[in-house]
Image (tube, rainbow, N blue to C red; front, side, top):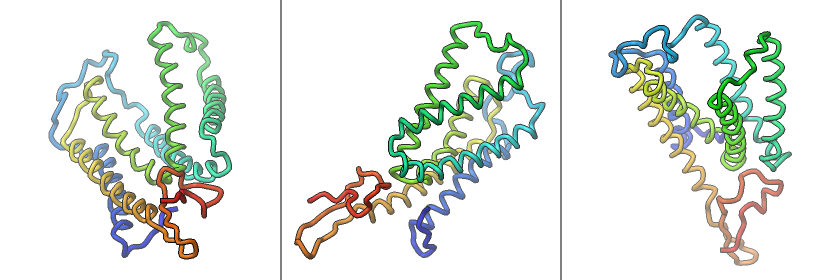
Length: 238
């Protein structure tokens, strides 16, 4: 969906920035190096002790999650065209996801006690998770409809940096030099891609002179990129 011209600096910036950003996220997971924080692990019985019994299965699930998440972002473009009300589409998506998740949980978890909430903290965590996911779906769908899936997807590697920071702070996970280098690469790659996208917007926001009427129009970037009438999008008299 992005215009690819290898001779264009903005296209090269988007391609190079994507490689650097994704490479940085991979480096945070694979590269080690000297330890920086939390050089000693917590006791095994601690609430925040790390576990790795199903490491390979977890990697496969993360790979599948990344694949389908990418498809979701791409599909938001035709969905926004047919259903411009993002609140409506996000509500239906959350409702169907709740039904699917509940079905899988009922099939996997046979113990009835696992469904009971023993404290207000557990209840607040469930409510916060549902609310945060709903807001996230809505905001990303709105952002994709206006700037495309690449703009939104480039912020996903930044989540890896945030998770690493929170894991080192609250769960006392070991932090290595590779994590710091990868985080720096993620931020640099993100800014390179955003620079390329900014150049795309400079081409969209341009002055169009109507030779027949003699009026001058300018493209308004506040209008969404997806519209049923592409000829009239953002055409406001200057």
